[in-house]
Image 1 (tube, rainbow, N blue to C red):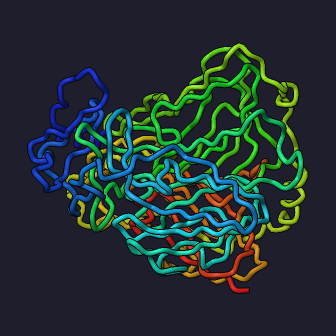
Image 2 (image 1 turned 180 degrees about the horizontal axis):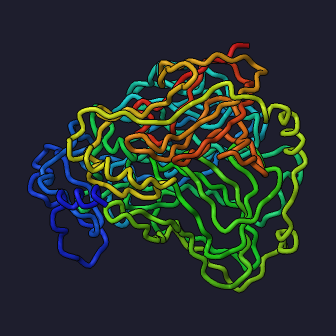
Image 3 (image 1 turned 90 degrees about the vertical axis):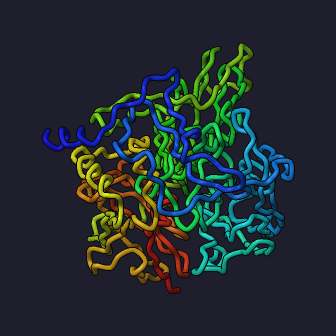
Length: 561
């Protein structure tokens, strides 16, 4: 209570209520774009968020940057919706990254795209095949392409300084992609993802099974890519030039999108079973997806099917995760796709239910043919997955090979932010669904915040860690997300080049497993991962919140043959 009273001393009187939920600071006298000079604008804030006394003129310590800023929009080709490229074994795809013109909610912006598309080209191939991607960099920044989730040869993993040199502007790089696992994967940059990925550099890879009846029956397959972007009435909020802003919580957007648009719509027939391939490409936002009360079951995760299908009310999907879900639309009506969350008001210490509309499924009167309703209501058991996982159960009770603690260190943050954060951590939620402190988050840069992976067995931190494994090892990693750190936050933990099982969370055995490459670690939780080490080379593991990665939350490991 005393800390809460002290907090009130620092609060200014909130702005007067307006007719909308967000306060637009684009016209603030020190935050305007002046001539050809790009200067900071305070990001939009909810009207319920009070300003802190004496902070209206604060800006991040890094400079502002926007690719293509000041250039004529007409110079750039208009981006087009994603197209599917069905590739046979040995085929080659030529793909570039470029600046494009995008329209979001009726406003045009200079953004980025793979192949001039949003999302980028959907690469579709059979499991067991290999394809070539001839990539050319036509943006004004160095970049690489990381093929997220693929157990491919190490030299094509797309990590600058580890597996390849950066691809400079105008240069090209040839990637060879192997597809040993069925499922949905995605690709994105591994340099300044906080900028390049946020501006549109992402796309999917759909790997088809070679067996018949691998999944249950469905009437159609639809990829859905979930994202957000931070804009105000003057355009895109600038990024940090030498380091990311929003280093504490990551850059939450205030405009949510599905497949790159804000008005996603799909028409289906009554009784259709639609297989949705879900991917979260947002910098930091975790979605809780609901399909308007339609019956839904989870079929597969990142790298495999689950041991058995599971009926669910919603799907929680963290940055970089993928899920395959079957949804049954049995009524003639409109179904809303929503992000349904319990947002947090840190200033008042309360939860606030929020529902964000993402898209609409319109079910007509015509009946689906064929009708798979009777098959949908059965939760299938997948014996192939159960048999695969059975070979690893002998390792479930082994002692951890590595113990990681997730924490954070800060330096040179403004004193008022430090004081506010000390109050904020009196209440620690396991998940941050929204940016509950946009001013403080924006002002924190990657030069002031160090997100840390601490090896508790050696005391080494982040990139000073270099684990050594061998092909054929089965490695257990126990990860503890420390709730007593300066600002604890959930972290989506991604391991390159391998697959893993989540065997246990907070002492409870996982009753239904799938092979994964990314796993959300809630605040205060302890999660055990069992890694199937099959792929030689030097690899990365890191938090997939883009700003946390660039604030140091990564480690390396070497796999010998």
